[in-house]
Image 1 (spheres, chains in turn purple, green, orange, cyan):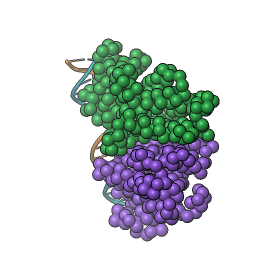
Image 2: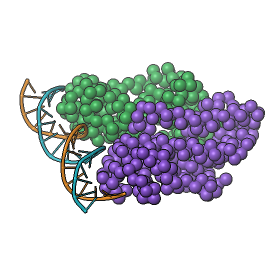
Image 3: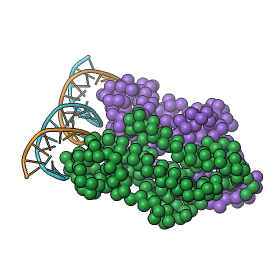
Image 4: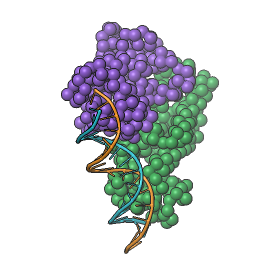
Length: 228
Length: 228
DNA sequence: GTCTATATACCGATAGAC
DNA sequence: GTCTATCGGTATATAGAC
């Protein structure tokens, strides 16, 4: 699997995500016509991601958001109940979608090594396609309510559990030699994270996402596959 | 070197850092008596680090800061010219001190492997001792002016250059087998970063900083030291 | 469904008493 | 050197016209 194939399969367009959010939050959104609503929600979420990336969600004012999205203050409030709710909705829905896509790809293969490869690649390709979204999920967690912060951490651990499980499965089948599955999984996650937290580092050096994926796989396998 | 020894040697107290900042910013600070100034600056910086860690620098109001530090609004403004300047001063001074300590420790040893070990350990021990400070440096970069953002990225690359140089030195001396020094250095940095960005992950699992350091060293060496 | 105009509250920053 | 009181500006959020 390369990035292009992944991109075709995943079909993660901002529009699809907005449609999903619309259907799950009908009660919070005053607009009833789906087509009208989705069209404007795309504008709102894209503007939020862009402005949050530039200066952070807290520093972004709703006037900034109106200017960037093209809506008025009154218009905006037909789509969101409050600034805080905008953050919550985007956070919950974003992390949900990411985890679903990872799990779906994992089902395609069976051997532990294939599972390791596809999960690393899916994660990287996904964060490449949704880089602002991933950046947003990471940076804005602390602005959530205490309760949602807790749920967010649990979500992070769910992703990490995918890696822990496949590492331990590989250890049971004598394919991997694992001394500490939790630390190894944490290391993989940290390497995944660097790709979307510091994209400038890799783009400046001309490293493609495929090259980075191969590097991470090689690094991890040299540690867990003895005398290779 | 273990964490306790490092801690004794480094002598990085918040008070020493504040004294340094006071001496280098005498023109910006209205208070002239060093002892009085340093005492209150400790309060201000500690409060800023704590509140920024909780809710972010932007979301922290100066009234929050006054409550937490015990100073009044008027009193606070005798120490800082503006909220923005507080951020700049802490960012510049914090990253400067961190880089200096890393470089100082690096001079203590000569062989590439020792250099790798001591740099990883210094970095981790330092970020353990100054965890809120490191977290602050990472999370608040985007709130800096464009010019300071650029300087901050250059600083990050300076640290990474330490790793690149020692990896390449080891490759020249046939101790390491390096296929891509830049990516390997970036990976090390990403692993360093996870320690202070997600401390809850490691403390919950009871992983000490020494254990984490050993794990990172083992992971990296299995990749760069062939058939070990 | 979308706009303009406005209400209300709180922000960063300062003046002036002590 | 530190405080209280207050300024002007701007934030989120809403009311009501179209």
